[in-house]
Length: 344
Image 1 (tube, rainbow, N blue to C red):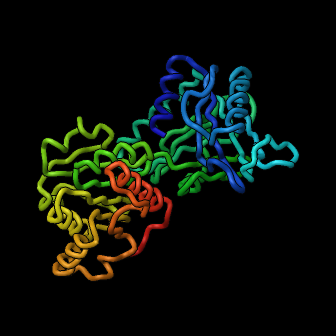
Image 2 (image 1 turned 90 degrees about the vertical axis):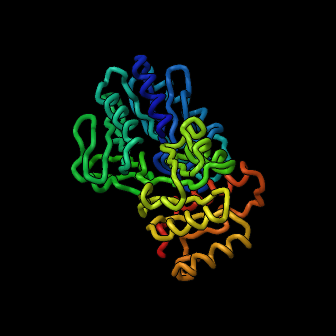
Image 3 (image 1 turned 120 degrees about the horizontal axis):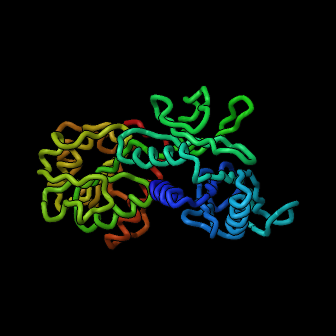
């Protein structure tokens, strides 16, 4: 989303009119769900996707028309055959798509986008909310935080708490319909270990909108130049982690260090935190040793093998190379993010 907002900001600064295309609802089998977005300029797609195929092509053409007409629109695409108004797709579902016209002369929109981009550097949850208005007129777009209104174009709605949704959701207030989606999540992925796996994993997680902090005791490895996609890199001894890192219940811990000693120190720290996910790399033999040492420290088996602890880390996809292991870890983190926070 940060990349999407940055592209929108650049285009609006160049006085280019845009249409922000968003899936705001879906039923049945569809390529993408609510919250999928792309931004369209007069010449076509600038960034993003709503699933590809014929529906995306039709949406792009619709957006070009709306740019010429300077108006917003809602459309439903039927993605299964032999139905009235079907578009020739065979996915089996249908999607509701909102086309929001953004006028480059609207300074309020530019301010919302700029504030949204800045939000990615803060440790606060932030939601992007659009009023699903139809026709000409200024776009109604805003940002809401846990503490209330952050910024809005035009008149803001009254019940802001309704917009604090865990995923993209339509919300009706009176005669007005809105779509709210989490934009910035306060959570971080703390990656302990800056070796080959971390180097493959961090850029992948950043692309998936996870915010990463990399920790290691090797100065030559833990540096911004090696991890340009990380929010932060931290240098320190693994025994000093508690004085350098603060993990919340929204955060994820990935333990992929160079040795079982460092893995043990990072795991012992993680188990004392409320982290929602703890993943530890290693063979079954190494993990058995780490569990025995954790048990000797006083951690119960309920804690060591609790629902939030994933050891060995990653989805079971027979991964072997650092890149493959990175994919398996990323997949498990996607699943964890989409699941309720585990207890214990």
